[in-house]
Image (cartoon, rainbow, N blue to C red; front, side):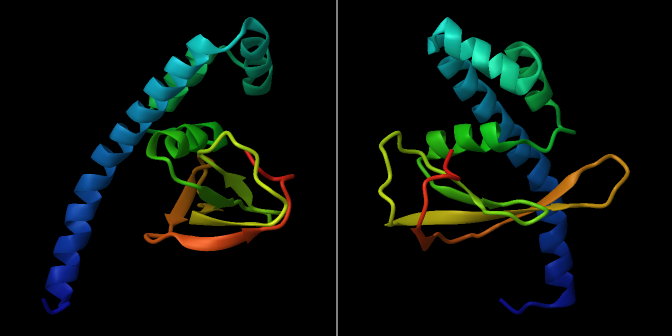
Length: 150
């Protein structure tokens, strides 16, 4: 198929229609997975999570359900666990990328991991929203330290 201006515009229109539905489905997966996991946590872990979130877990899940919420690392962790994919997150402001793994096993100091890359950028809008870009194919990254693993 030739990539004409018309076919590109049609593709953009279809993508624009599909993204809200896909986003809603991913949020629903993250909420369901986190809710199921939270119920299995001990009271001590639940208290630590409450302290880290700065709100009750139910308030956090409600925020996650909102189409305006752009997500966070906990949400990405739930999706990584659900889809069994490793994600390397590049955040605004530099610093080391954060590796989110789906495995609970320890990772050695130097290990090759197939990962998907996710770059998050500030959109510059007044709402404090963010844009994100994700690789379509996984790559192999060599991991040199376990200090930035979730």
